Image 1 (cartoon, rainbow, N blue to C red):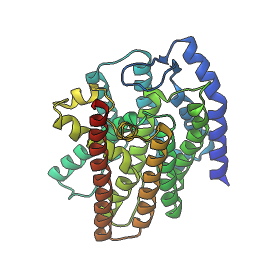
Image 2: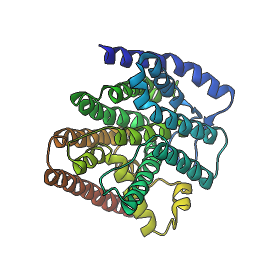
Image 3: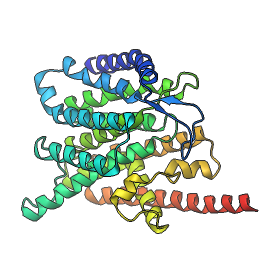
Image 4: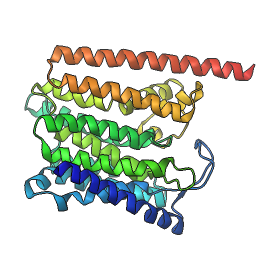
Length: 347
């Protein structure tokens, strides 16, 4: 009952706050203009992520002290990431500044908040490798979710699916504090979706909203205990968040192969229609079709992750291998399909 109340409260907070936020975005001209790699045709207000954040920040008021203590590092880090994204929405920051700020916030949640990937021996080299992997995980997913936000309903809808499967495991294993965090975000994202899909009163998540969602999901994955075995505990969030991980890897490989980027800063700075959803649209799917295609992949991976939470390392490796085959087939079809489509256009 408490989870239901938190979800409904979050839904209502976001539903009521979005129209106000939308007016403020127009008033202060915090807007996204069409052109370049963007596919929308009308000036659209940003800051939609603030509506989801408004619901999440109310969670401490509904939680007991033990609940708040376990989620406080995530809330503080997510708040800082949201502020950074908000500054980017209002006035563009350089890629170097954004990356440095994200890195510092990530180091804060690692060394102050205690969030870290843990599976190696507890020695100097094991600790260094774990910290580096954690930085890569959090910063990578923070930006991967930002890049996933390229079609209406894609980022928020994917977050709902990801959070749902996280919450299933959390409630099955008695991790109710993190479960409430997931439910709160689900309620906020559900309330945001109609505005994001509305053609007349549309609003975007903005950099603040998409990076906030990515960062929160990355930290939730680190904070939760997803299986008894340490290795399987790593595999479960990798499956649930498989789509943004695949998009980050696929896009990076293609950009390096085509000599478009040479370092991390260039990768962060580069803007082009070369992400997963862009390829799906390029090969002929309508935007809404591409969104539902990616939803289906999220659902499939989430189901596998829930089943994996009670399995062994061998079964976990087989599940990851299976997911890799699926993504490999999809990547091949996308690249070949885009080349054929480009050839037909020239002819």
